[in-house]
Image (cartoon, rainbow, N blue to C red; front, side):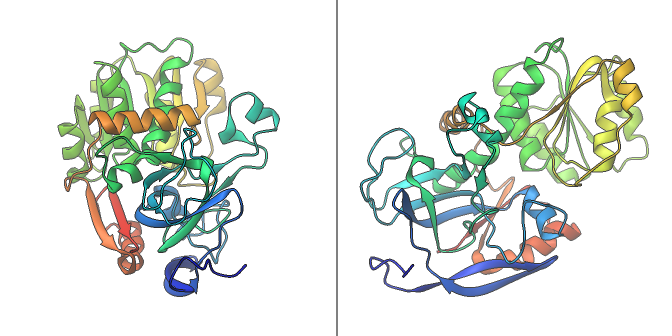
Length: 358
């Protein structure tokens, strides 16, 4: 399809993943929206941990060449006759938060109210071009109008926060796990911090969080973590056991490495729940006999429902999560090449990098 006539240019710069550990700025055609879609000008786009595993070639959902970017806010370029997620009409220039998970609405999972498990789901930035570019297309029904005064960076945080909303709900809803019991979160990256914020907003429970970067743990402490533990410490496991003498009622693994998946099982109490949301390693061995004998509930948590996304926007509007320099760094799109490399090699420890394509 030809580039839309309402855009003054036919091409745009995009951050393109071309091979494992290789990102390039390329000039690509401006996308043209289908009938049910909007053309959007990207305002802010966050780098997700799952994209780091994709960058390394460890994520089967992503195949190069690909323009990643699924955590984003954008402005409507052309409104058309479609309606937004809340049924309202889009307006040119309107800022929206985009739910990048596209479902069919007809399969058994969608009928059960679980569109994130759609048999034919597609994710913007994985199955199709994403927001690490000046322009992107998205179904109008996936675009959410924003509460008054919400910034474009806050709106770009709706997607990872919605993931956290669902993970915390899984941790609290499984049989035998009460909100008064301690919660252990492994990883204080963006998803781990968002899980902390959601859990703290909904409960006064004890929350222990572990990470290998002191700066991230300082953010976690400021956000209300009861105990912070540096995983690099020689006695990290002993510190966890001291903080959790009976084990955690629930553990959320926001990393997804072989080490953290094993640690989560070791630190949960008998009959407790382990929620796996991190996606670093494609597969991991688990102590199946131990899981059986301790009746440990193992729960995967993938993405979110539209209700989770709406709840995330409400939490952002309430100030439960605020985009501050304490945990967010902004970069131009061209800075994405070094950002991916730095996040992978550990030279960048900021929990969330936001790219600004325009």
